[in-house]
Each structure stands twice: as C-alpha cells, then as structure tokens.
Image (cartoon, rainbow, N blue to C red):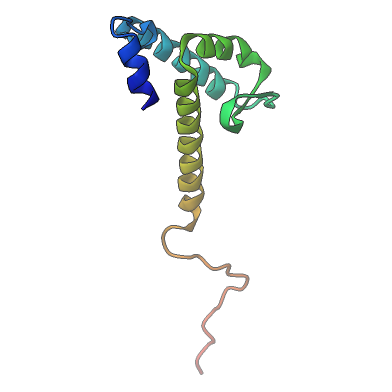
Length: 116
C-alpha cells in the first residue's frame, strides 16, 4: 500500500541500487565478507553484525564495504541466510557420528572355553 503510493508519486525515478551493476558490486562485497569470515573462523569474533552474526575484527573493512554496497534489507537477508546455512551444516556434521550401526565398547575379549 505504501509502496504503491510511493511509486505513483515517483513514476520516473529509477532506484540505482537494484540495477545490475549495483547488484553485482553488492554480491562481490558480500562474497568478500563471507570469504573473510570463513578464512578467519579460528579467531575470536569481537564484532556484532545484524541478526546476531559475530565476526572477527579482521573482517571489519570487508563488512563496512558490504554494508555500504548493499541495501540494509539485503544485508539482513544475507546474514540470516549465512547463519541458517551454518546451523544446518553444523547439525549435519554432528549427525555423522550417529549414523550406521552402533559400536559397543568391548572391554573383554571372549575366548571360547576349551571343550573337554
């Protein structure tokens, strides 16, 4: 409803941030940030992004570029998507230990008793 009112009042205005060139720069900045996040995953996260995403200080520059290049709604969407994918991957990795037959500890070795 509000969008319709806005669109009708500005019919000739083109939103530059949704054009192909702007989207490409947004995607490049996003990929650079998440690559930095994966590369620096061993370091303690000290910075807080949207939706509770934590990242190390070494990725601050790429995060700033990401936020500057993309719409805020896109940044939140990409952060949520990244967190969801990491959570699913963690659950899948954890489940590997529980698949297949269960092996029981064998503290004693049973030898057949000699038959007389």
